[in-house]
Image (cartoon, rainbow, N blue to C red):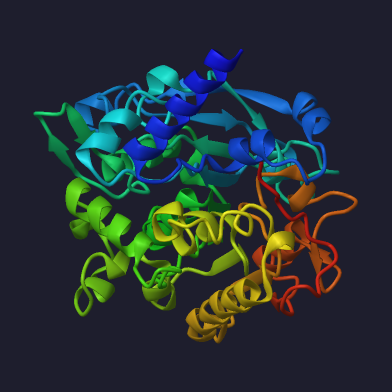
Length: 413
């Protein structure tokens, strides 16, 4: 047994070294590793399971995963009043910023369809049950799998390492395939995404709008995609350094918004705070003010905390010292400053709650349930629906921690 544990520790350590940071596989990671949120095994077991469709024409367009395999998506058809409405959910799953960790990534479902699950549970915003997803349950709902490592924006290759960085081509091939399957006739469309997929939904928002006739109602939703260019606890810029590697390695520059790259460097234009004010299509941001991913891997990663001062705090906010909480309040203030201009636009929406979490639209307990987090008595699903269907404007920003008692805060082992 001791030898087994030694082996497990060595494998995990090597994984961390290869990535430079843990691959935060958002929803799955939270399901399996966090232990302080509500047990979701029953909803997942009772969920709709949807099969994987590989995009057969993608290879001819060079639209392939890191290892050259076909990209794919999971599609559940809409019906009734939702038959001509489409929701596209872009999968998250971190990034790869070097040849070494991209080579590792292509041996996982984040870089190869060979390792992708053949079926996925559709929960939260993807659920087909009106009691779980009141506004979008009968839409055509798509989960586009993520296998490029640059939020669907790269376009280059490294032949020596046998790596294909074709995120932009995957995006285009997937959209073309879905348009041929009826999305071109959509009366309503919503582009959504979680984490790295939330960043992608911002980057591709106006492109998505451009696919449809002017009369089609098109909006975008980013969940936990507001990654901030901030200083870490050691005074460095961990996330900026990582993003710089992603942008340079994967040929992202040409696919970033021209309004941004005309006056800022490409790495800065991979940060949402420098993009959101110029997105023309209506955009809704769902984000926690104390994002668990950013705390663990951007603000206080082990590389910036060699003595482990933050080791307990980054796993469990209840174990943070007063000075650490003050530091996290500064992060919240940075976020609120970053969205000031964005919030002034009437067409945009916000749901910024003061929770320690990451990705709230795909999980049933945080999207729409009896005890979901709320702001102004609205759950995330209600707020997004009110905004999308123009029932009311939604620009909800929570008071600072610890005022919100409805949070499903994450605690990590």
